[in-house]
Length: 248
Ligand code: MN3
Image 1 (cartoon, rainbow, N blue to C red):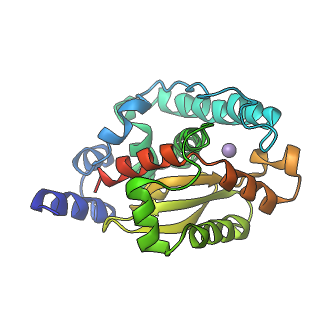
Image 2: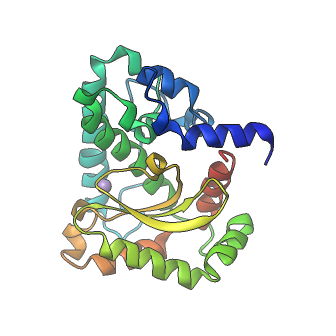
Image 3: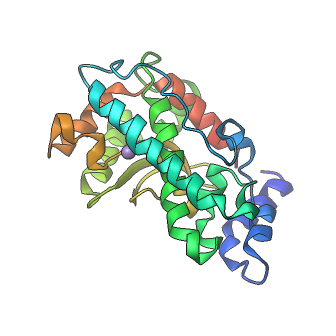
């Protein structure tokens, strides 16, 4: 790690200590995220198309859930985010990852709405990408090696993800994340919180809100998590891992 990277990380890590300057200026000084989100656009945010047909993962994951999940739940988050940002022009230059990572620095009147809806908009994009049909069925290349180092085996990673997903009380997400030291780990977050808010970069996310599974799996969250794990596109996950590594 070079000196510039150390400084950047240290700025990110001490963001919470930036209390003496305005929130927007604090954000501008501490963001390593802009490369990460060139593809995500800026206000007004658009709902990206699902990168495959609703029924592409049938029969494991059902078309009706994908349709509602993308066209209603994800769409509502994008619409709600645009509505709350409409009257906050000073925030229009911030991207989704920046808003989700640094929501705590935002004005109190809009903080929770942005936290939830920027988080949701960002989290769902990753979720759709890593479920893209096709690609490798097992970890490949650099991510394969990193999983071996962090978890000893793919099975151990799957056990940890399953555990995090099943134990998350209420709504939230289970994640494999990369920390500033380049180490992978598994965490879960409540509601739509992004791991970015903890300085952790999401590589793999599993949506465990009931809207993600209730139509097909009803109360059987564990069966749904198993179905997601079996449907992951590891070629895309390698791409996500390389993007995450480029941030640290
Ligand atoms: Mn969802």
